[in-house]
Length: 173
Image 1: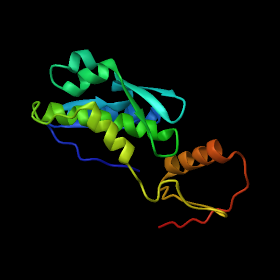
Image 2: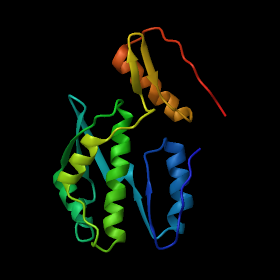
Image 3: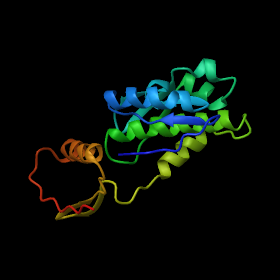
């Protein structure tokens, strides 16, 4: 349901995936790319209260020579997500892995520091992703585009509003 462009000699980042898919993608993609970064095993996330999580890089010390950000992540970066849903922490893991990949691919000429990441995450707005358009009556707009997105929408709704009855208006192509 999702795709990417894989190039030889390029850094490829894999977002967190359900286990059977992850293994298949690893087997197919790893031999075809220059460097493979699996966000789920590279970036560790420890959720904390108030939509906060501590992110660390599992291979940070070994990657520190290639990526200053990986070295910072080895010590940990605490981020506050302004986006609704626990799945957003997985998205942040992917973003951090991609930034480490960009630093590696640039040979260290592109540098990203934790202060810039904190500012970027705090300023993030994602219209159409669990966007509360109206509180009374409650109207939530979400462009869930696949089974995983629809599951994340349901999980987020239940986490915020419990088992409240809802009316869903959906469109499909």
